Image (cartoon, rainbow, N blue to C red):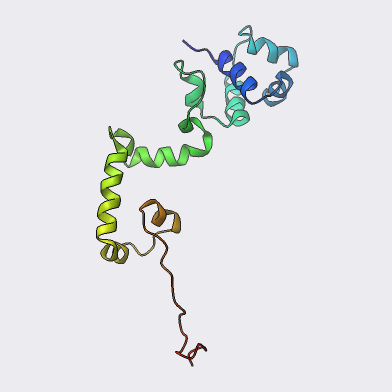
Length: 149
């Protein structure tokens, strides 16, 4: 079982931070920060909120007593993405990469119909689906290269 104070110590070392940096982030004295790192002081709910903000790691990471170090999914910036994937049921799949490969192949084989049905895809969504940007020609120009008029 991994305790929160062990995670804090590991992250401080990994990121080359000092206990005084932790003290400042938690709003406690340097001695209290040292006591927290050694497991002699309890982590309060406000401390947990500050840990989430300071290390930019989701609360779920801090509460997971199986892992000492965070994984990509634990980073706070990815929370919206993870929530969207969970709502779509993507995280329930055993092999999401397998399904994605099939979807990409289908989209590429039916490219024109797919793009007609989904004209509002962002460039990032197009890249994700393996659809390269389409070179667009000049719009509203005559064969001589000038504006249509």
